[in-house]
Image (tube, rainbow, N blue to C red; front, side, top):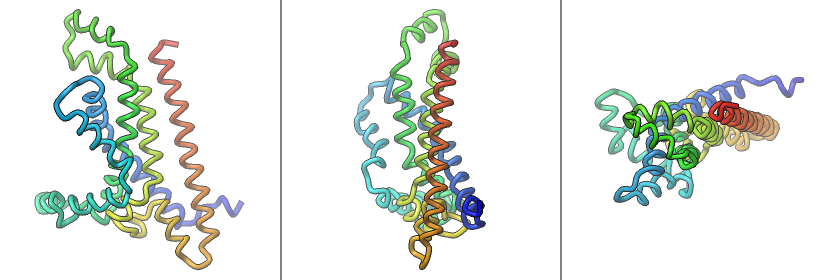
Length: 233
């Protein structure tokens, strides 16, 4: 039983990981749905470039993404310096930056899940509503959004699980600060660098696996439940 009793170090890393991952999902939600809708429903100049930019974090080394974020959003960065002078908010080297880095890395997965859900919708339903006089906004919120809820739920859980595992971009952008940016992956890395840290690293590895597995199970359950609701089963 002692193995399953979490230490303060493990609790701190787990709670911070959950906090960062939840905020990463929240950050991705609205822009992710908007980006998926644009890619699924609209043809415009530069669409291929826009699509490539969204999926770029999937193919770039995470350290590169973190470094770009540091250059752009660091306290003296091109955008981060302006934000700090205007609002006093800094993203570098704190948990808010960790959430932002995780959101950037998870964003392509969320967009892809929602985009596939949008592509599967029968456009005839929206056309029928349009012929009955419904406006675009009403059609989106009363027809499109309910139909893509399974995809949104799947995307949210995938983004959450990806955020839980984020390491490279996080450590580059916000460093490895105890209680502030040291999430589960960074805590695991810390343990591997300590003498006799193998036992602690193994425990953190198991905690990470259980947490990610639970998130995927919840994703599958909610996705199936939402699908049955949409179909009226």
